[in-house]
Length: 428
Image (tube, rainbow, N blue to C red; front, top):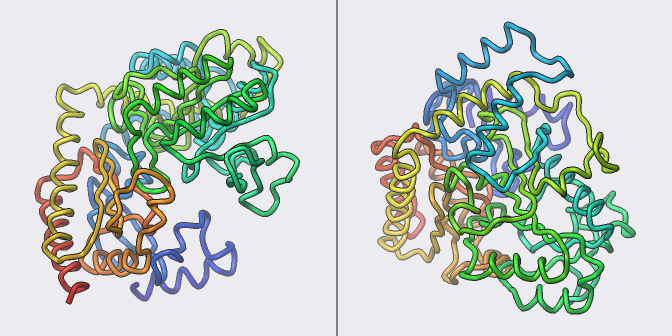
């Protein structure tokens, strides 16, 4: 990194664990120190040393329009002039909720919160309150935020109680969570056959994005819906990444499966801190002040995020918007796969819409076990080589790359050309 980024990182280490406010930013998975951002616009992000990169993070997928879209920035500025936070209802909340519901009809009722973690945590509490059950089923490699109930890894077998995946998570809480292989319906059926009447909900990333991009096998989501209905549990789609990303109506539109509850993230707020949880009206009526499930937040529905979200979701309705993103995603994924083939380096490039991951493995990646066969050291080499060539990818093998409306054909071609050069050097 440049001298200024290095200086800032050294200073940051005096204040933050690992020098960062979120772990993956520390570049521990890819080696080296992180660059510090000065500003960004469109598809480009610029560091404090003046070097610009074509950015495929986009605030972890939230900036579907690109960085600093002029209309979104203007909406935020106008809202800020009227006050940044009230802790009281505003018309903007209702306007944004109307846009969300138009794209996600399954959200008959909803609540705005301040993050995807908070959305998933709240949805789980509502599911437990509605069903009067404590059990939860989640899947290996799927991440739903850092709430205690969701930081649980698998036990030694399909019917084994979960164990904490982080220090500070009580074992007594973790035992209510069962972690199963993603895309494995038989494991789900087995668990429900043994403990189905104890399980409040199944929570799933309908398209996995936090172990790298992995699509659901045909019938997997439909199977989850059938099983949960059979046993009176709720199906929760964590669409924090996929919502408004892989289709306007997210994975539930793309795959035609309607969950009981849905969680959405900061893409709904134009990249500002916001989350949404919602679903069936009868379930959400359990939330205070109507019911006994408590959830609150001073910044829930804050006016800046509402203004940015209204502008963003309005722009996403442009004709051909998602067809264009789909074409860009295909173009980049095909180019990266061809570059790897030409270099004789084994990769598997998975893509759903405008999100993709190139796994450095020769094994088809359909679940967490397959993802873990990736050569992470080789990915680190690739990451650093691409960064040197002006391309900013996710600083972890097990994350997605995201394409925005701001990425041009020239950006995609430059990225593929950089990948050919980087992979060619790695092969040599």
